Amino acid sequence: QVQLVESGGGLVQPGGSLRLSCSASEFTFQYYDFGWFRQAPGKGREGVSCIRGADGSPVYEDSVKGRFSISRDPAKKTVYLQMNSLEPEDTAVYSCAAAAALGNTYSDGRTYSYWGQGTQVTVSS
Image (cartoon, rainbow, N blue to C red):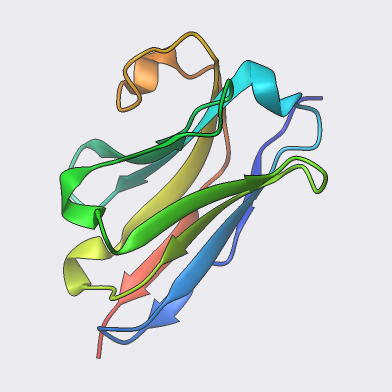
C-alpha cells in the first residue's frame, strides 16, 4: 500500500526550528513532485513548498521564503521540510503529498494523488 508518513511536528517557541520528515518508501522520486501543505484552525489548506521530481528544484510560498527549506534523500526515501525562525502564524497541521511530476501548480492540492496523515506544528511561548 502506497503511504506517506510524516513525523517531526511538535511544540516550539517563536524563533525556534523544527524539521519535518515525510517517509515515501514506495515512490520513485524522479517521477513525483512532493509538496508540503498546512492547514491552520479555521483556515483553508495552503501550499507551503514543493520539490520537483525531475530536477529536485524547490518552490516556496512567499511567507516562508528564507525560513523554510525543502529537500529530499532518494536513498532514504524521505522528504524533509526544515523550518527555521518559526512564527505563531506557522501553527498548523502540516501534511506531505505526492503528485506525478508533470510540472503542475505546486500549491494546487487537487493535483496531488497521495497524502499523509499530517503532523501538528504549534509555535507558542
